Image (cartoon, rainbow, N blue to C red; front, side):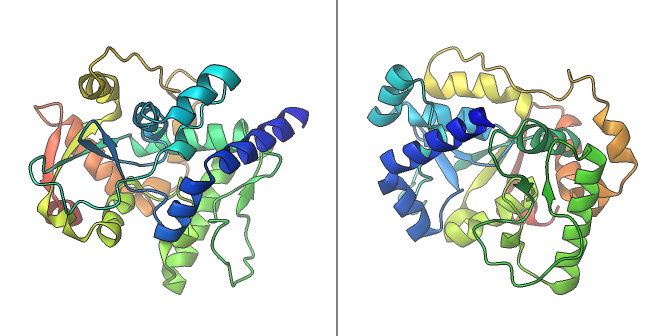
Length: 274
């Protein structure tokens, strides 16, 4: 518990140091969006390379470099704001997107947010920043005593409830929202995104692309679920979570890995029609 409290206190300190960016995020309602690394524009999707992408974007921040060097903090999420607009981008009309297999991304969320949660509160699949007007009769908060199967079943129940009540998906925690929906949500923030082309890569290409963007060799180690002894695929197969919730992500990923190239290209309308 002491470690969790220290972690929480450090998060509060970082938010205070970056209070200006926190205010901008809240005013713009722009927590997620498109990240700029040396004029390369990348979609920020939680648990799909987000931390690695923000790390390189944060290197331009003096506060980030000071805290990393002197206090051993690495506040990459707090120090980076998404680009405010795409209006002034005239030449590079490509937006890069890194995607994970939905099964791997889902278990990665469970590992970080539930199994090895560093906060002194349980992880909620409901967005804590949105007022929830309805009392639910099923579990939406999870801790290390909950199995991955219970976690998946909780997401399915919440997703089915939201569909039935026709409630906007802002009620979902951002980590639970599908990669597909994160991209669709960009149109609300960037109306002219329809003029851009998406270049979609598997997450395995992230190191190579970050090396290209930053001009130096990148060898980031990803917290892969593949090397974990827990056979998470068995639990996923006991549920309908992929077809029920993450079907679009599955289609995108399967199309990507079956491509003869290392990527696929889609405009916004083509992506919408997946």
